Length: 492
Image (cartoon, rainbow, N blue to C red; front, side, top):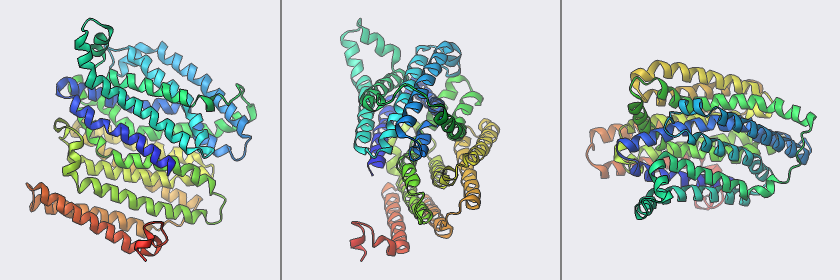
């Protein structure tokens, strides 16, 4: 709960920036800045993976079999050395990097990006150590404090910056405000956040000795490098469509950037499920490893999957059945593709199921299979997007995500059942997803034909269907839910 809730809280604070930013970055200039923001932050995950190269997962994997201090010192020393190398490389290649990122007028942003990446990479293992040592309060405090600084700085710069600049038009802040309005404010706030995070984690960071144990390091790299490759391919499956769109959409640079802004804002309406997946992964991965040796571990994994799907289905319906409310999460200027939201939500449901399924190759040390799966997903992403973006525009990005994650989910299930069988209740899980889609289809049909102009009627219909789905879940799971804390006493 601490790990999940703290990450949800931190991500929600960031998510709350979406309405603020989309209502602030309006007009052609605002759309261009938001489009650049979408593009730049789609590249960050690739570079974050390179900077950390699977060290977090590797730390969890070997902390139960290796000397923890020796393992931690070896990994931190390695990350510090490679962070310096990667950062210097980016700075030396500043001009071509700025060209690729379309930062022609702000090459200094490349240095800011390198600072964010370096500080985040150095913080990664201290965070992992907190999770491994079951110190969720420190973990939660650090996460939330950094995000509060990030959000607060952005809001201060956008909301109060203009008045401060106008009061002293010849001062340094006026120059800063006018030069960096938009993406610059976000990157600057991100630098401050990363710096604060590292300061708060300095005690954990400094618990290492600057030494690399060769035997440990060989085992770490052997396990971690396939995760690096898998992570890059997995990130490509989720983020590469944005880069492909930015580079091949057959319009001018400014129009392409504005179209990307519209897709980025639409993507935010599906982000709730993605955030839940991230929080679940952070809390679930150490848990899955910790119970791996228990005799009923596989039954536990199956039970977790079932309830995970139920929660995903409820989150899906919460958004699509109440879109008349959720659409205000982004400003009107960005609401041109709300019909893509269900597609994106379903894509992330598939991604969440895949993340649950892939525990089999982590437990059996068959991480190469994860590489195969994600590379197949990457091939689907590249072929689909290169073929259809010129025709469909950014709609191809959404449908490409759905196809990619669906393929990965199916491959992981069938290969996993062959190498590490887990008794998933496929009939029940498929039933929950089918009923979820049936309820959405009913809502769409009823509201488009009977209540196309009545917001109240659509919301009432959505509420009835949402309650009906919850009743369906309770009916199916009543016997198990009777043993739940709090909820159980109302079902006996």
